[in-house]
Image (tube, rainbow, N blue to C red; front, side, top):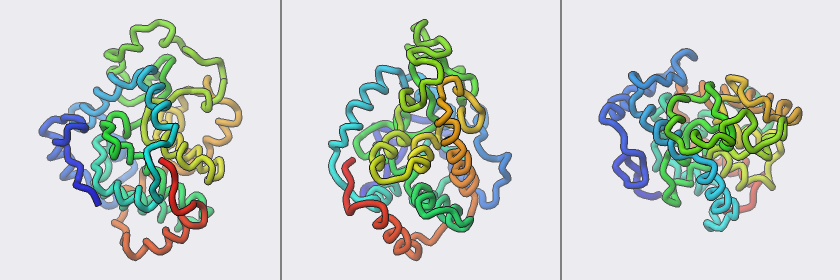
Length: 287
């Protein structure tokens, strides 16, 4: 396993000193639902600093460059489990709700899905949903890997966290990129919409040939909170998107509200997940 990623590493967001104190107290078993996704600049200064940089730098041009670079899948081959183990070196600076290792959070999510009797492909989607964070392995800064996602190339919704930070984004000054539809057509479908660059789109692209479509929607849009929790951007969605988003909405509580549950026993559960992974995937995937 690689060296632990810290907030001092050059590729990560420089954050305020208050962030360390915040992280130390953010794991709480049995959180009430009202305690999740509290985005307030005064209470969560490190998270606010993250989104200030994210909203400044996620331009249409940046996204198009990253899609071209990473969708070629020329970064080598590795197994699903190898990608999961890498994530244990990562602390997600955008997330105010957990200080678990990444693989513990993945298993919390998938085990909650399994306990409720959902299909094996959905359990696997739960285990895999954050694997795209291995983008950090290639030196991507966290503002280009984690956090809530949103469309670029059109007006920003006020339902996105910290929407006021978009005023510093260069695209905010381009009138044709700030209309309701921007570069898109009404109800064109999300497959034609460029989302802010991050781990969601990357992992969905990596596994696109192996997972059923509802799972791919869960992976691709689980961080698109403005849409699946706030109802934004329906003017860009097709009827098929709306139908598939019922799966995204079904998945979201497992991702979010499992974060306060007891830590899973990774080694005890590993044989089950190795078998599950082998059911759907070859030994190595292109990344």
